[in-house]
Length: 248
Image 1 (tube, rainbow, N blue to C red):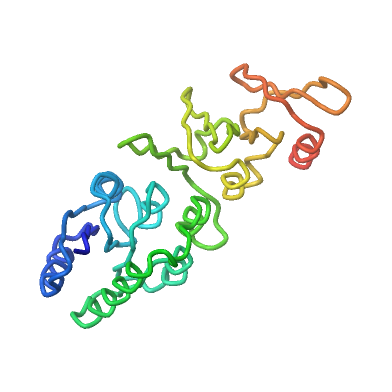
Image 2 (cartoon, rainbow, N blue to C red):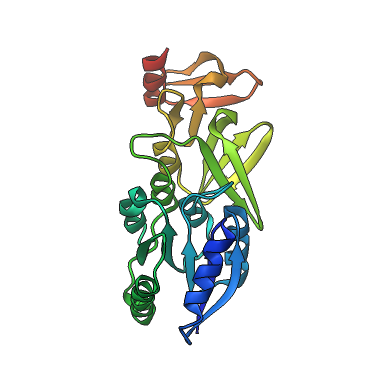
């Protein structure tokens, strides 16, 4: 059986999908979600084979849902908007179905899902969190928020609340409003999505929100210390100092 979760904030859309899927004996709908937060939780708990996923939803959009998943099921986007198709295939969606959904079109998508699942060993590798986060944004725009999954909880952190970000092995520690959040991503990946006019990599282990900077002091010949407005001290390398000077 292809265990399937439906994710759409519109009840009539989910009902139509259920009706069409009922004609396929090898498909079982095991869950339904009305927003992105529910989707992350339910998909994490049920580990379905397939997710039929809307793009524009309250709280989190479809691409942000994928960014937060620890394992990736096959995904078919089902949406009324055609402008996200290229980004959907960049994150290895099996298919992209436009609403209003027809029986035959959904059957075509399911045929592709069956082929993908049958050839699972040869399926394309799951895209990185950075690629998924980039796909969630319109081209040319920087991230407006950072998403962090903590067990069953999802933290949505507006970038203006971020003080600094620190590399910690395969994770980054995001400091915001007195709290630290761990995210499975590299410092280079998360920095690539942030506005360079606001966030500067001041050291190989730190990215700083320059609005938090109070002053810089020379520490050694080629290094400095950044003193933040809250009293925190962060190291600044020679290359990091050069980047800061471009903004000062």
